[in-house]
Image (cartoon, rainbow, N blue to C red; front, side):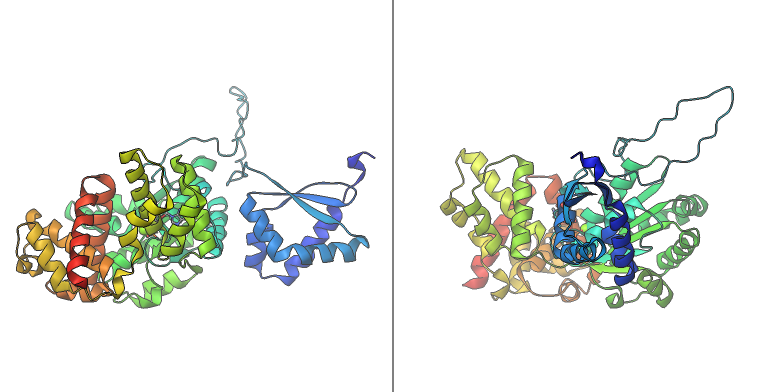
Length: 462
Ligand code: ADP
Ligand code: MG
């Protein structure tokens, strides 16, 4: 029998109606808005979904109730099959074309993903394609995808929060990238809260507030990373408050990230806090063992190297904090294997990653020790690190010492700030980010920081 004789689309429609009444609107939109009915065969309905992740999630969460509803409706058992549609639908519906009689152009529909625009604010490495979704991040990732497809409509504003290295920047940038590539004429701005602050201060200095306002209040999507940086920055908060209102009133999408729930940001005006808390607040938590494995496998694949499952498991068992540490472990192994042109055996991995695996936070390393060893290394004194001077010769060593303190001890950023001459905790966070990005940009930095860490650990645990 020809498969076109079967058409269960009407059952599917009714199933959707029932699900809509059973689920919350958000949940329904998140999981069912992206499913497209494709075709039917004698015993099956074939649905098209955007990704294998999506398929697995829908299967796990809803398959049995969907099949139940179908059974009730049709009186027979109809199964669901999924096909994966790799070409997502364009974010924006095509605009009606103005056609003038003299210039009738052929309309060129935008093939999904075909607008190969690079966005100046966004970095290439972050996209939904290389974000591994696990149970720790599925809600956040799906919300972000919904936003990228439907900016201003799905969840507005949206705030993603969670500790360092869990993928906040990755996700917020992916929204920008996806929207940028899938729609024409869309204005997207991505900034860190720190850049936003600096630009604002500069605009005041140069009497260019007008240009600043124009830039931020005329966007379709505003993405601001790390808003905890706005703590105590009253004038910038005020400016963002007005930007927020302007964009909110015109249904423009805003997404923010933060390293903690908004309620825990100190010195944030109530009115701005309440704006951030409007809309969707979603958290990212550290990945489970299974998710860590999936992430690491993906990274191995991306880097085009061969690493045995045994070694991958070893890493994932021992590195439990966050994705950035997983990456660091992998990078170290690859560098080692490259250098010696050796295969990475389990023993090499154990030996190379020994210090990453040990839980140094449990040791009794003091800030004094760190300050002493770091200042020594840079030919300074511990007092230089605790003092007020901000010359280049001191500022970077101080940042390194703060970074190492955060890596090796349980002290909070506030406590670390106090130990470094009563500095604000945002200064500490900033220092850590600086060191992190410098290490990424300049491969010569990481080895000596690692050396310092090693030295401090040896001293601290003696
Ligand atoms: P955050 O902004 O939360 O501190 P990032 O987005 O910078 O964290 O993530 C740290 C690193 O880990 C980045 O290189 C990022 O690409 C990677 N990463 C984080 N989560 C994932 C994930 N789920 N899948 C793939 N890579 C991830
Ligand atoms: Mg980040």
